[in-house]
Image 1: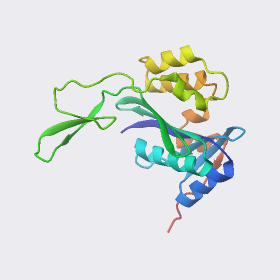
Image 2 (image 1 turned 120 degrees about the horizontal axis):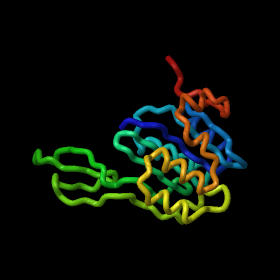
Image 3 (image 1 turned 30 degrees about the vertical axis):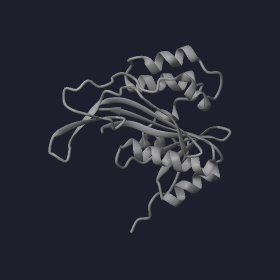
Image 4 (image 1 turned 90 degrees about the vertical axis):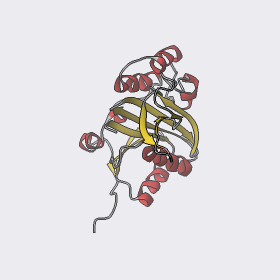
Length: 201
């Protein structure tokens, strides 16, 4: 899946999240947003939400706090947010649940899977539009007062993924800059600390 950028918001102590990245030998940039508020911008490997989601889960388990994995995709246009607490899933948002990918079943018949891994036959009606567009579920991530009407409009609207991502962050009072960077941009910004990553042989 072509990807614009992905990142993880972590609410918890730096040393705990740093220990997770060290154990996993995960190369990433850690940028401070405020007291016990961090952005982790991982070096992309496979560009899959489950990879970022797993990192978010591990960081949440270590800190015992809130995390959110953000992913902005350009093909198909998709904005996904996975919110977790203590490593357990709390909420999932997809900007468009109607996107599908094609596979075959055990009989060799074509089947379609949507972003929630629900299975459909070609031509079968399937849900479309945003999934999980509940602004209250985003409130634990907020850095200040939440603009609920504005956030609702963004989550249920039709803006491009990058524009939607920016709107979500602004309505939650979160500094959008670090959460909109690619790994290369985060490294070049000089705003954070780069973890070493895997050892080279």
